[in-house]
Length: 106
Image (cartoon, rainbow, N blue to C red; front, top):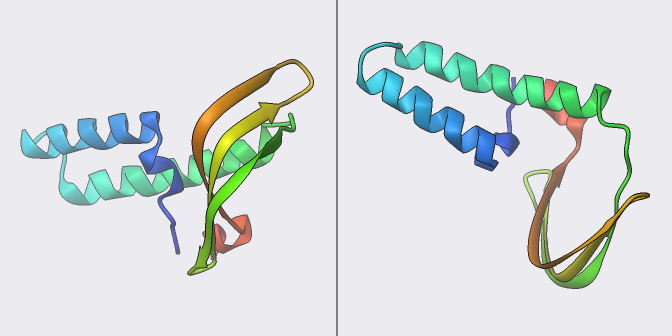
């Protein structure tokens, strides 16, 4: 199964990785099991986003950089505005990584 490790660089993903590293270092967890936990984390995050998130956001900003490599789009936006039905947020710099979710299940 292909995994892009998209969510491991999020705050929750980095905390999970650090915790698993500590557990492997202390001998509490085997490296193989730690890898299985990370793969399951990627699957769970993908499922949650597909099935539970229903809101939509509009993003506008200055497109600084974009690239397409290995079926993954990366966009760098400056002075971005995130807007949904309830609120609006301004962000000076944002990196968006996007891929086809169908590729995650192959």
